[in-house]
Image 1 (spheres, rainbow, N blue to C red):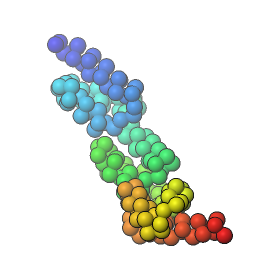
Image 2 (image 1 turned 90 degrees about the vertical axis):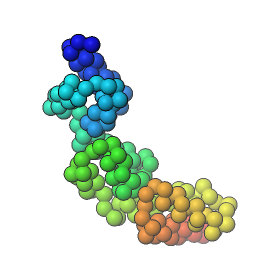
Image 3 (image 1 turned 90 degrees about the horizontal axis):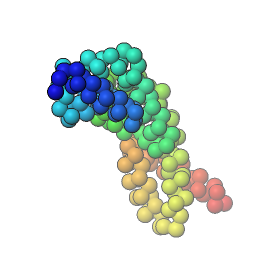
Image 4 (image 1 turned 45 degrees about the vertical axis):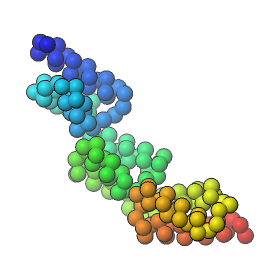
Length: 162
């Protein structure tokens, strides 16, 4: 394949990937390697896309944080792991996670616990507690946050029952 056609193919692959969903520069590099496009062909294109703003790891990370916090309500540590797996730089990860403090973590975990507690209504208390612990732990919350949020959720449930 001629160098011009290879370059055009690389550009098309990148544009197609970006049209499907936002991706980090690292993820795009991995796609290019899988497609067997040489690094000397795709790297200048990726750098150009970064310069013009088509690839923006900071915006990508902010989008991931917003989505995971509002929809899935996962913990900081789970988001940190996901961003690291997607190849986002550590400085960017710390920057986008900075606004999430311990209070925000506790609030999100408590909201999840209250919602899940309603769904587990007819089960024995020890089963409910065990399931809540597992659920919140899988969301990435630390054990201290898990147990504190369950305690708050149970207190809320008692208020509603009275």
